[in-house]
Length: 133
Image (cartoon, rainbow, N blue to C red; front, side):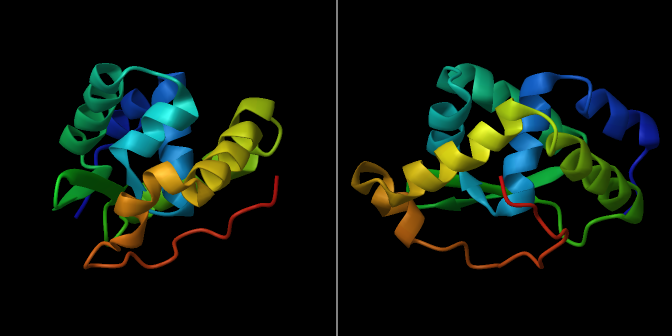
């Protein structure tokens, strides 16, 4: 699958979408986790995810009542290069570092355990080596 560079860069032009993509580089994420980490209402998170899905950057799987989002697989080379750049740049931004800490905290919290315990049926390959906050 090939993506248009303009679609990638348009998707990267919003800070909330960058935060979402950065979290998805780490692992598949449920919509409820995005809400908690990013602090946006569900409707806004869903709009950003729909934009990314229509652009061909993410896909989702419905697991019971949850939608688990992940990066597209296989990841097109033009997207992978740009995601690597995002990881590298995010190392210097405290918001991205805090997002990773917050995601780990949320995943450990019992109130979100139901959607965490149910793994997606198709596990994505590890695209990018991640950094420690």
